[in-house]
Length: 107
Length: 107
DNA sequence: TTACTATTTGATTAATTAGGAAAATGGAGC
DNA sequence: GCTCCATTTTCCTAATTAATCAAATAGTAA
Image (cartoon, each protein chain N blue to C red):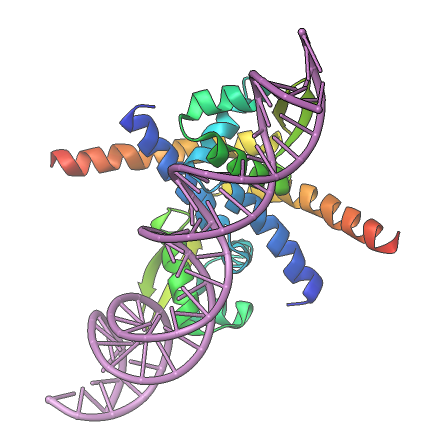
């Protein structure tokens, strides 16, 4: 693999990796309902501000969200709309797995 | 967040996490060209067999690939076709970022 | 059964990631 | 200037992940 090919895969993987955490995925889903300040996001996910802030910076670094200042608040928004399409597809697969899990537990 | 909601996000995140490694992403792209044995995949990605095997088990656990035995060989195939659609979308974003990076380096 | 091939698993180590608490930053308003 | 507010960064510790090598497994064929 060429260095350029390698860098392409690395950047691409970074996007998936950023989405590969329940809290961050929750934030992405929440941001579908529109631009939010950190304080709103904190309330939604229910954990320490400092923790949320760090997760947001991961999302930002990978290009999934962007932020802007509005007075005292920092507003975050989604910048990769297609992420939602895929998330929806994965959702279906996951729902199926959850159903399978339950079936196993019942059996 | 309810426990069920939590479990849903956890499973969903697991899929993204599985895709969040350059080597595994390379394997997924390679498997677009059809079912392959471990030996072929090893040749493609160019690293230790045991390492590839472990990465394959991560992909399998998250439901992205499935395997079957054929004689001595184990054949792997993609089982989540939509993963490719999203990968294509991310690709475009990443290409733009790569171009930006180069622009910065030139400047 | 023995030898061989393809793959997985286990043990170890190094590196990265996640979370909480406290300190630091950057604007807004007095 | 100082003070408040929203957010980020730093420091620390615990947990997870990745890579390599060696050993184990599972099927094939003599």
